[in-house]
Image 1 (cartoon, rainbow, N blue to C red):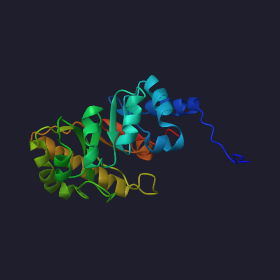
Image 2: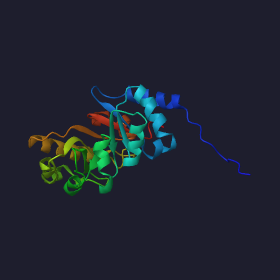
Image 3: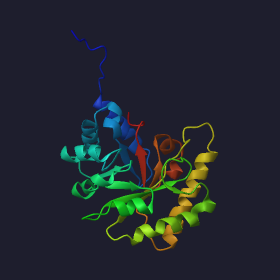
Image 4: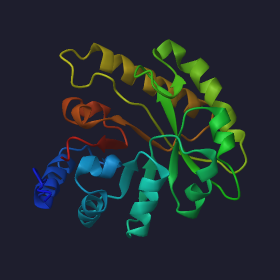
Length: 227
């Protein structure tokens, strides 16, 4: 006979309360993106996203196309951004389900265009060193912007946003986070100066949202802060 040794009890009211608290600390015209990847970190992506939608949250982030499709099929509207890389053989889902895709290279942007106009958020690597167009210092911004520019010439691509990820926002010192933020701003400013729209700018994770309100920009991404 199998006996469950443990169970998780999720209090959606607590998640709702956390979200309200975070939203209350956002700057004017800044909105919250709820990170619900990996089944909302085991809390139940559909139920969490539904509760947050009721609060007026319109932006969600996931890791894969399948996670995004699950939200769509469950009635979640608004913007859904895939933070991971969608394989080429799944690219049809981006347009079919109106899903936005993180993009880390010109080649990848070209690979996901087919029978529609996929929307992307350009990923800038300002120090996390995982994915993105390289820009670890403000001095790299012009070269980084030049590397991004060809994306705007790809027929069928819509640039809806640009973002980076802080590597040490919850660390003891703030120097590296400030360096990352400066590099990110420099890239967005360089692209704007070249007449290109970068869309929604977002760089703050949960820790940075609270510690560095001056870095909130257009949107913040909340994962652990919600849970």
